[in-house]
Length: 257
Image 1: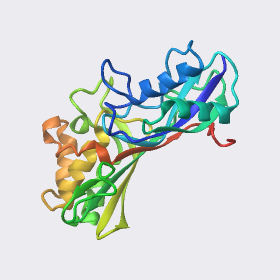
Image 2 (image 1 turned 30 degrees about the vertical axis):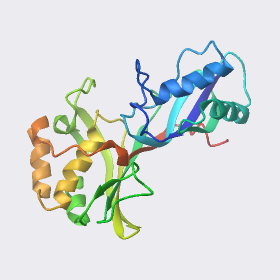
Image 3 (image 1 turned 135 degrees about the vertical axis):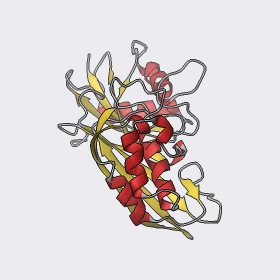
Image 4 (image 1 turned 180 degrees about the horizontal axis):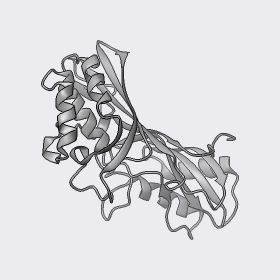
């Protein structure tokens, strides 16, 4: 059965996350329903990672086995047609070998979190950024972020509902960049690792925002990490500023599309 990789963009607000759920809308179920309009034999699609309710994606990756060969462009167009008006789009389709697996072939995931500081309410980007009212100390947040880099037991920054076998992960990058924003400042968190624990990125951002406000110091971040205790974590930030921005593979399946 021909296998295709799908690059997917979605607005997470209407969904209970990526994973198919009984009686709740999900991104996975939306795409699968559209695919079955084209090929009723399709069972399921497999994604690089499961995003939570309200989390967005600019480049989620999934794979699907079809019963016949499709022109990649036509497959993407057909799936997009059948998903309307849901805020989900297939932005890339590539034929891949049977050995390609969206989840297990991935070498790393890249998330971006957008936090905007301004007094006026967010209007045009409501539901797409987390807003705070006062500017933050980005240098202090970066110093706190640097304390989290490397291989650690991240129990403190792991949801109690996390199903991962181990709390140990290697954080490769956590950088904070200031970006001009209308009447305010956007703090863009660039977070990269091979894989993440449940709520790990949102736990990082919520904790670092506390550092940026001056309520914590970078040393408090180190102490929280060493505590290996969920109760030592700062507040978990809302999901709607978080984006799955890139999934890395040994060879980019979309490089030729």
